[in-house]
Length: 278
View 1 (tube, helix red, strand yellow):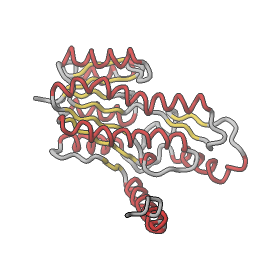
View 2 (tube, one colour):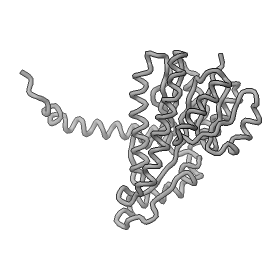
View 3 (cartoon, helix red, strand yellow):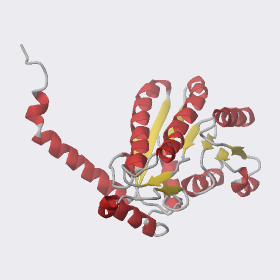
View 4 (tube, helix red, strand yellow):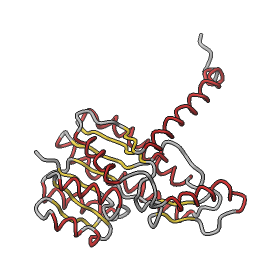
């Protein structure tokens, strides 16, 4: 039986490219976006195997209707790709609470609620695969990205726990952690603080400016990223974490080294915090 996919955030970037490749391979897919007009061109090419779904992941009714629409038309949901997300740049001190809470609602709670919506269907099937698009910023933090990092660290922890809960039920989970890719993440998909504090100019300010300047020239190819995600879904033993991009691998290994350094240097103090063994 061919898999049925539900992909969020298909108007641009990873979601759009993934939807196109999934449908080209003959899978069925719900192609979801906040503005359905953004994905109508994709669906018109595959009228028998795709449906356009209006979906704002911060709206519970949209989530319920998206899952219902997909399962009523195609009978099941085999792969959920939680791709919808936004960015926000600024130092911790200068960041706006309204903007950062909105980002959490999209990046984390939207993802979590989409996951909860499909789990009953996957449990009944005793099969399924949930792909959560996180970031290398969910493993290592960077200046100007503290709140964005926090959303992606949350996605990573949520997904790891989910994987342990659902493995006995035949439901797989993969956390995708990209580095810099040529999507809209660093462009129109990210807001920033309006009045940065001068004292953070060389840290948060400098990194924000570098990211903005880099937009459109990142080494990551969304087409190749989509192929990698499909390869993971088709694998008999997919990874829990799938890094995408050379910079992602470099930074992940650097984080491991940093953790090991602190753990080893403070081992005696760490172990000494327990009650003495009798």
